[in-house]
Length: 480
Image (cartoon, rainbow, N blue to C red; front, side, top):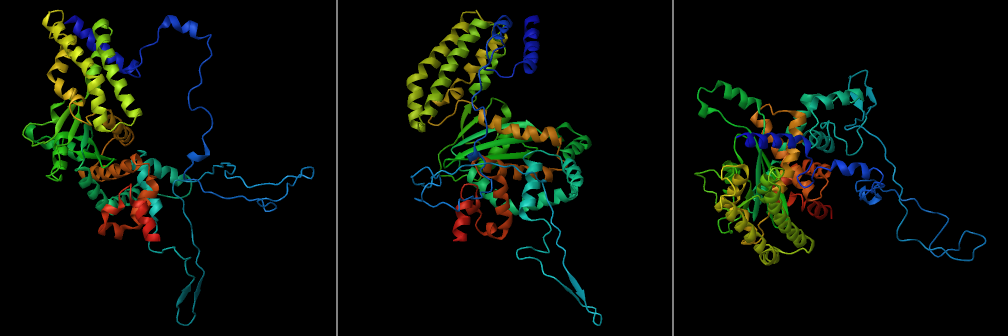
């Protein structure tokens, strides 16, 4: 028991000390010798490439005194000059407010007899009914939902620069954007239900309305938990990211999503950790379960200091599997080619690792109820689901994709703290899903939201033509 408490304390300390599981703590004896060595430059150091400024406005500067094939302007040279295919690029950055305002002063005349007022007209394209244009709505939405900037901070900043934007107005704009994009979001959810692979996970959330209802509940069974579920669906070479904030766990949310799935499709893969809420009993989840190898590996990383030989053997074996998977990604193997490669190069490694675990437990060299014994039993109990990549094409190794995706939700939670109502939680989840799916498809989220708001009437009729990966093609066709 003393040793077990030591292990638990070590895990707690590791949360604050270790930045990454893959990097060991530096040896203090080597620090003094490393001081004399020059630090190596990190990759990617230097200036940002001009090509990275994809949203920059392009202004062409020409030499009016030169033409293609003209004589060289140098008097001492008899050559000719030719236009280069790649122009020189100079980037200049200008400042601006998050939301700017323009005042139109309309000249007016009033008749002294009939008192009719004659006012000047607004410029073409400027509406007198819409105070906030589509891009302003998109920027306010992204600042709140994607960047996690609290509305009261935006209100203070805008007041300081002379363009007032109250919190209530910000929320009205965000809600109007959510209503505008609802048809596209519904189409995105239906598309996600047809995926061949689902990554799912939960993180906790705070909804004030639910908290108040839980305080009023007389029975424990009436109280509800609060979660934000992250789901990544891989369908037709696209990744759809969904965030669902409310009182349902990941398993129930995935079950609701699968109700929209076409019945003639093959069973999809479901990647998650081993928590029971991801596969709740009584729900007809028709999926092929895959459990996360990274979660299983972490159990040995946490106690590697106390069982170095055993844990190093396990971690080194798993590193070979990850190296094989990295090679498959580098070579752009399709799922079937990746499966064959793993069966050829990783199957023997995993079989040897399983024999190693069984031998340690059967020979009484490891206590089953100890930390190392629990780690072994965790793997052996879920061996088939953890090693699904050896039997099913396309099965991933771990759940890291959605773990990274949920960091966006955690950032939002840290800055904005809570949702006031369940309705606001759903609105935020809807917008967060659409924005992050657009970012995953390398689409500018400001341009995308602006296009959806400007074409609100059209997306109601054909929402499937306004998904992040095809909306630009649809715009070009309408423009032509």
